[in-house]
Image (tube, rainbow over all chains, first blue to last red; front, top):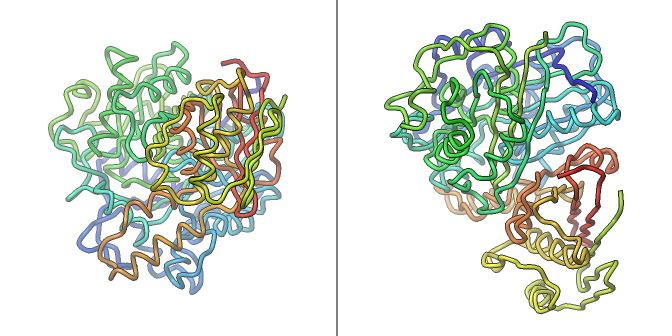
Length: 354
Length: 176
């Protein structure tokens, strides 16, 4: 089977521009929650890229401005195939004039132009879109449909999405506390990440080793709290291997973290170090899976997992795995987990390039 | 790759390719009643059907009809769902936003927010039929490539459009 390597990465988050900047901030347990200036957050704080407030041109989506930042970090010559993960795309264009447009496809058109792609694919799997796009691209490489592909995950903060999640009671009263006993919800964030996947690596920074995908088929917004099908996705990705660490979905909602911990503890009696970046970067929806894969490569290169921000009293099932301090990791890959509305589960195993 | 089941729903008719089933209907609730009264209809959870929007209703019904069309080969545990092109969720986005604005921008309605994700009709079909394979909505240039890149023994593709909604179930060479 053809190996799929990660050749380049690019990242723009509320903690800064570039992988190094964001990873250093994660190691320092920095968080990034502030009040939005581009809409009335009604007292809520979000993980925001405030430079977009002034650097978004009239008529341009904030999401497109995020992609421009990624483009500047990537090599001039990029793969011809593009896979874009997003949940709502250029949703701010709808907010501006209210007319019905396919906002995800609008962002796909922008991405195709910005990254000079000949073929562009939209991959939408709710908040599992990021990893779903990576594995769709990796599967295309394995199937010999292409030798390389650019995968981009991008979502912005918006009044639209904030009002939607607020209506579901999914938002934290203050800041998110993934894997803590007193967690009470998520906080939204905006970010974009990109990985270049290839079958012909020159200087790879990681390898897409395996993945598993399932659907709970239980409830449209809530996960199966027993984590049965999420566990099966993880099992398929691990195939008997023990990961060095886990980057969880860890939204900080009671139900998500419950399902995740149930799934993980059913597979591994002793969990390896566990971390969620949503207490630092917020829940960046369609972008989070791509960002998690990027942070997985950075973790493997530095042999250090970032500390868990927002941690109070750990959930007893995670007590031995989460830490408020950086953790040295053993040999093995990083298991990254995504879960999305509709019961979509996704587990991805990223290994070292060497 | 072999087609083992296929179904189509237009504005007033529905049909299944292999089994030759055909229905004329007045509305989607009428079609639901006709399909679920068939003895070969698989076990379905339709408890939330009444509250669903038209895209979700069409996705659910076309999926059930395609499952019937597969006959004994229908294997929900081993089937992946792939939403393919179609009309996305522009109408659902506009509906949620206009309702939120019209109600003073104080509180969105969760029931209108959830369908603003393109993958929701597929997942509603998964819940109805107990389909546990991967689910994703793709928009792109080549369906054959998209199918080849899904690892599942069976793949159900669903394309939703106002004029015609289609579901096709394919048997692949992948093992469970």
